[in-house]
Image 1 (spheres, one colour):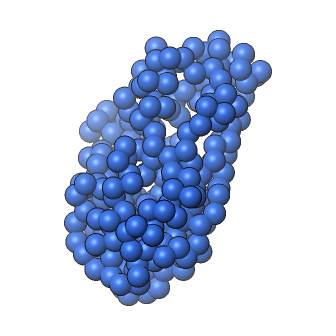
Image 2 (cartoon, rainbow, N blue to C red):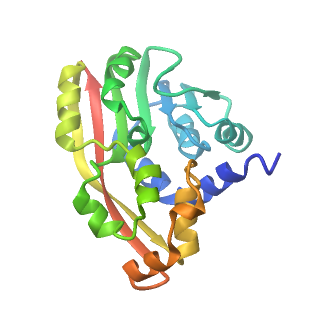
Length: 241
């Protein structure tokens, strides 16, 4: 069983910054006891359990497309008012949610512009959709933070990312029956002690192999064994009209 969970275990270790940002967003949302919440892309359940604590005796459902992460969440982040299940943006269970929370997930959804309508349909009137995702991946960002990237890495990883800018989100909100309660730029600041740790931070997302990385190019680009990078994010709270 431990071998099966290896990738999910490593993901759990490296997503500390995502958890911190998610907790900050929950603080701004201030969910209330008795509310019904969906954590869309719950991962290993760290944030989901916090949501369950905040809305108790309300209920929380955490869904993720990765069975390994769902199993870890069930084992380690259980609560009486909390359930986990397989699911994603293309298959959202339940309805009449007070809050749909989505932390660092939407940039993995290639047609993420098309999920705002289905998400709105799952919310109560006045319900909120809160999320953090990467901003649009520009050539300038690649040059500044990923100048070492091999062609294999660009094709195998960067092409899978679909970030949204603040203006993108504002437009999609207006088109899908939301009003913008709060929207702001954010920063996904990452620091790794060595190049090996840096590469592992990418490999846990799946679909990548070590041959896509050139360790010497990475060291040359960052000028040391220690790696620091800072990516832009979009942080939003939308309210269904």
